[in-house]
Image 1 (cartoon, rainbow, N blue to C red):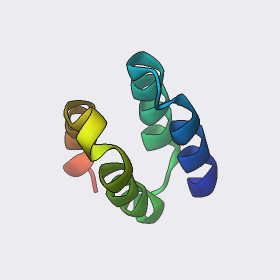
Image 2: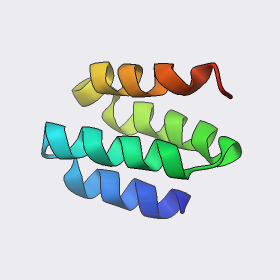
Image 3: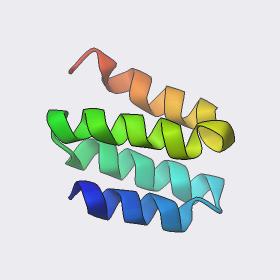
Length: 65
């Protein structure tokens, strides 16, 4: 599932709205271990482009990890 989420985000990264939608889905579907790896990957890949979106989406789940 982790690799699938990475592929999807890479494919929709051209569109801010699609990116945020798919990021939310990925966060809901991944388990804690994969979620930590996914979070790090997202910031490495898209931190320059979508930092605000990443912060908003990952900040909501930090407390639950």
